[in-house]
Image 1: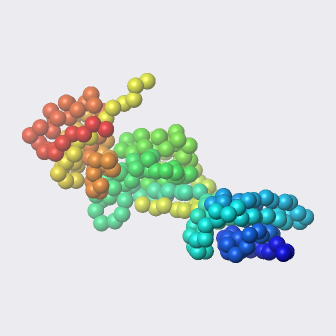
Image 2: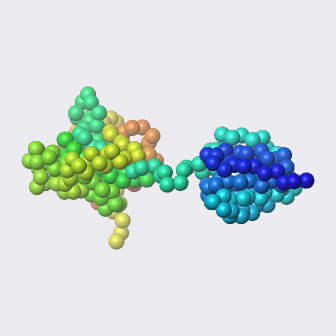
Image 3: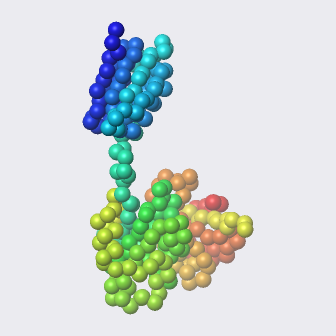
Length: 208
Length: 74
């Protein structure tokens, strides 16, 4: 009997692994054709999970031919594509989420009451140092630059962030406007080019 | 180097914490207003953190002026 062949070339994750799972449940042995490493890896994991034999052969044009063989103890769980998608890493290679950028545009957090807003921003910045993963960049502009000067209540937190590798950009125009350029004690003075570029390139932008 | 040990003063409300902060600032005692650590409370509250060696100084300053609930070693 010819081996059932599943052609999953050109299909997006998790389609190849779902097709492979369905086919191996109906056949003792299958061959799956895929064209990317992600699919190979997902099917390899499927094989482990379903106790199947697994082998992969490189073919021309980046095609990989995967052989799956049932070894007897294969479970017959129904195909739940959503569960598989969640379980398998469907992150497209090279498409990592962009940098996490925190924007401190004010030395208060929220509107309504400045005394409260002062407490909140201090709590927020202090909490940032425990955030996992840490932000990639913190940008301070407008009155947010006052958080990065000598007598700021969160100066130690910002310095800790900088020590931990977080890039802290402090708006030069803003410190100039407030005449506190000589008091900046965390991060480095930056300009609107860097600020705009960093914000535009952010995967996520957090603004308290 | 030995790691710095901290204590936090917990207050009945945010306004108590603020008042305590003003007193400590005037007295020149180093402190920091921080969110109440998660393992102590899940409330969104603030507390005053100071180094362990300053605990007594803080208590002396606050006594009779601002009420606090408890002091927790971090």
